[in-house]
Image (cartoon, rainbow, N blue to C red; front, side, top):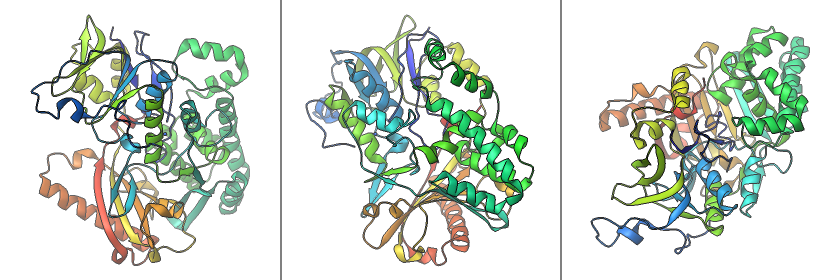
Length: 501
């Protein structure tokens, strides 16, 4: 059996890259488990090892690290940092290895010409000060940190076929009133569906969510909260589409529920587990969406600082190429320059594809992984476009987050069919130079459309698609958008590790 803790990405796509990240045990039962997310001061040279410290002097191969760690974490994404900090605060000796120069992964940031861009989504759950689902707040508090946040009054503004416009207000009653005003004949159906969502959410929110995959833990929770656990057990095999159809008949309203679920899971309601949908559709009102001052990248910075303050270590520019096995047990990792680090446990925050396909050189996969690959359904990749624009192009009441599907519900799940748009400078103007805004655009795309292209063809294709997306936004929301652009960056982001099954 492999002794490997695997920190999986959560069930939420980047549009709600929720800090609900759960690490889990492998079938051996001896892996490390934990949960969560989030600011950073200048790196402490004594505790945070830079790669220059060991290989910057021209050695052909650095010596093997002599210290034995309790856990090595591969990757400093939010899941990896939470696993590391949760262990460090309990006294474990932890080393995090990150191949880039900053922490965060898809929750990181980059800077261009005075703009600070979030790499991934700006829709941040888990920052509230109440309940059990405020997982970012809990993770930061564990290492003595707290972030200043800005409440978002509108989770998302939907722009849908037949000119259907729906704002998901932070206040639940305001949202329900707006939705009923659009579908007055479905008032009872709307209340019935969302009331079931709240029933599930309240059950989840009553539990201390450490792991949803650990039988012993869940067994203990059952004795503490039997009715809540039975509620979750009842809804576990059900999807949001089936529940919606119990209450709602209007085809357009059912399509709206599909769009609600699509921004949660990148699939329609019939393919979205009801528990997953309920968590997001209610938490946006209970805890609300809150944007961290200075950008999403501050979450990983804060966790990284907290890890160091608790005695942990982070090594940047340290790309793990192999997990070292001994008698079927993961005992350490190897870097490209030959350095090796050893520990009692290895936790991977790399994607499961990289973990089991590249880092582990084994003939036989763990049974758990075989089962996953049998039921795996591929989720889409995303084309991501970051832009800096003149502030004058946006109306003064523009919301921060938008979802655009202009004229055909059948395009919801098609490549380039829908557009996710975040404008974080609506909430935090310090992210851009004065008089400017940031637009971060996502659209689904099949990674196979981009594979095998030369660099020149890739850049040309990316420019064509980006221009089409910009034209759609210009026609639907922001006339004159193209002429207001002063900076544009684009990239492909694969979401294979966010897949649903």
